[in-house]
Length: 139
Image (cartoon, rainbow, N blue to C red; front, side, top):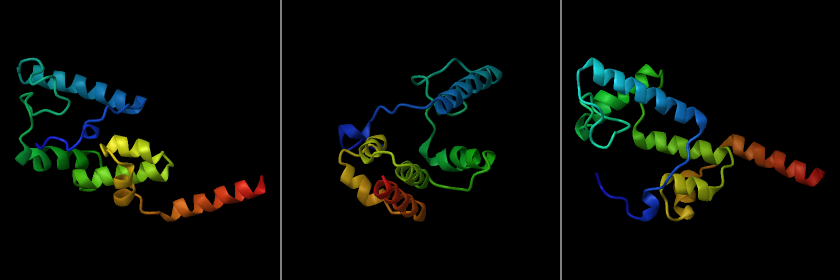
């Protein structure tokens, strides 16, 4: 795995309660799997996503044996990490999250990069902008 190009490439990202709850459930599930498989307690720095042995997931196996099966179990279409990142950025932007916040969460040092890559305008964003102008002009 390559190191990030800038310090912004390793952001500290606050998580909401739903994400935190999901991670807590995942941690309990991991511990139960380790116990069931008679493996030692967490290894490699207590990884959030680990192999069945509790070690780093081999990158060559990650998509086929971990990522895609998780998407299937969640009832989601087959998507790459890059596509999911793009979707997350688009959703944040369409929810009017400030572009600097989106850039920081994506690890971009310059929000202009985020705007160039991720800020295509969706029809709902155009409708929301029109409604905002109506509110401004009506005030």
